[in-house]
Length: 273
Image (tube, rainbow, N blue to C red; front, side, top):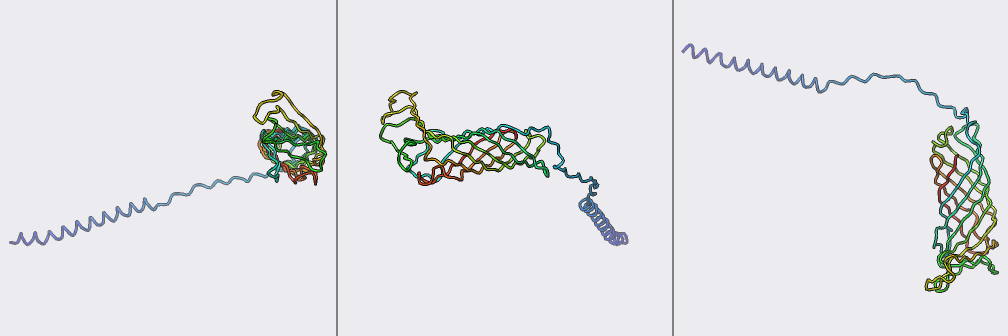
């Protein structure tokens, strides 16, 4: 009987002791987990680097860079604000310009420069089933549609100008223009040298050639067209190639000679600068 009572007394003490030990172990394990979870990482060492001085572009030596260069432009042309009676088409209306230009860097910042030059610009506008009678005796330039009559397979009007372009330019790397981003804004003034219409391969209304595919009819007269051309220009590109555009502020035709139309040009410019 005494042994039984002794066992009943010792058993609860042993259970309580084990429970406290287990609780203590669990608490310590939780503390270890929180330690590893919340322990902040050591901050990266701060490296003090000296600020690099900004380059003084006014002191860059560009004496080895060419000051003169050739500019070639080619692309698409159209007449804006034209009425439905003037049908442009039947060929690739285009421009082709060649200029010789001088480049003068700004003394305060060699990334910028001014350029001016002289050259020849030409614009070729193609017409669809139409004839433009540049030699007409009328007050207004006739645009004759010929859907049901004889018509040329290809027909265009060409204007040739002597032009003076002026630009303000920007280079990201003025020391090496061939590896530089470039941008330019400018104007160009021109005087009309020649205007002519040219038709090739006269066809019947059924599409048969009358005189053969080499037949050409050409007429020259400039009195209907504006003798002075003023346009705003712009281009942006990398290296020797740029995308370019131009808008002729002055009308294509003289006042009273036809509808008020302006020429829009978009194309590619190849230039060393």
